[in-house]
Length: 319
Image (tube, rainbow, N blue to C red):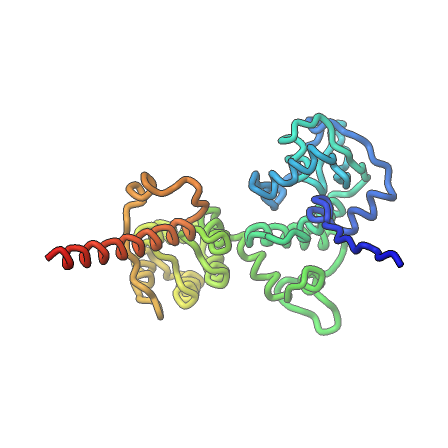
């Protein structure tokens, strides 16, 4: 009796970077090849298209197998096309030096295009806080234009608010949706620090303190940014709440900010300040972020400490 061989089928790169809905629709609609030069990115696209290791994997896959799942575009009034879903596939195709890319052309309203664009990208495994913030905001505005309820300040007893509906679709509470959208009120420099908290970069601001800081005016946020750079630290949640309360009561000054920033934080560990100019001259270029640089320096110090102990032991034996 012959034994059947069990084979494990690994997912293709298109399975990883596309949704099941996109793959199903690709089998039902007409696919056309469109010149990459004729396709514009979606305006205010909130998701970053990074040229990293994952992008290189996609480039290699496209060179070997081509694009198995078409992108979704819509035609503009000037005859050009606008990318709705497939910005990373488009970038990977450019890096693979392709001239055209397979597309499904759909007749979509602005709101329909926004919802498809956001939904397709929210399937990704790694999404930065800033990406979620602007994606949620865009989709909520699209839902509003489509005539659904968008009461952001209160939740009716008998009806779901659009924020609640959005939260259910993306797996977040409506309060968490509100918090993410609040991040769009941060100046770019502070918002980048929120992303840094996920990327392991510094300086970084945790999510909840960042939400509180979003209630500061833009001028107050700019002043706070200067103090963060001066004190080389970011506000804790308690400090951020104090700053928010002072701002809303119209008596937040630079002096008041300084007083709050000088407060010691619970469980705060003193930091050793080292010139990054000196470290950059000796640290390997392969280290990707501050967390890896810190780990490298710690291991180097540990190795040096062991070396010093051996040298002291050797000198003691020679005596």
